Amino acid sequence: GDVKLALRKKRAPWDIKGMLEDEKDRNKELKKDLIAKEEQEKAKDVLLKHLEEQMAQRQLLEDSRIAEGIHKATAEFLQELESANIEKDRLSIEVAEKATEIRNLTQSITNLQTNLIQK
Picture 1 (cartoon, one colour):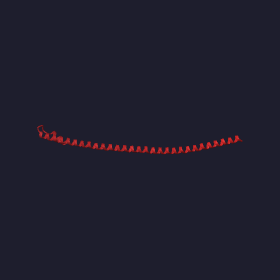
Picture 2 (spheres, rainbow, N blue to C red; picture 1 turned 180 degrees about the vertical axis):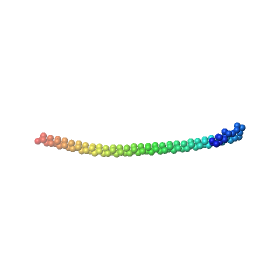
Picture 3 (cartoon, rainbow, N blue to C red; picture 1 turned 90 degrees about the horizontal axis):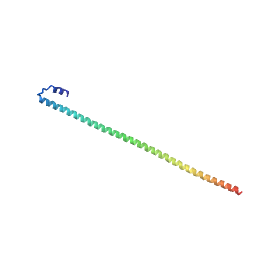
Picture 4 (cartoon, one colour; picture 1 turned 30 degrees about the vertical axis):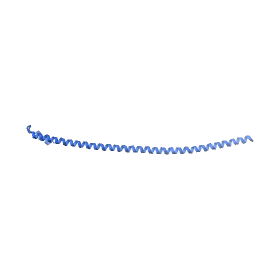
């Protein structure tokens, strides 16, 4: 490019053929530059698309990790709830047994009082 530019400057004003050749050469150089720029743009687009895909993959991975965490926490919570329900049932049975004992004791006391009164 620079060598041809130097040659172009030395042409005489009446060397129209030479000037046209210089113009053609300059157009060829501009076309090459344009093609190179277009290829750079294509490469940038490909890279950008690749980066977007990577970001999407990362987001999917993050979403699946979050979902997995929620699933695990829910399973643990349900397990604790089940254990709490089992404990509540056990305590309910215990309370019912104690209530029966109290009724039996109350009945025994009533029977003793009735026996004492009768004597």
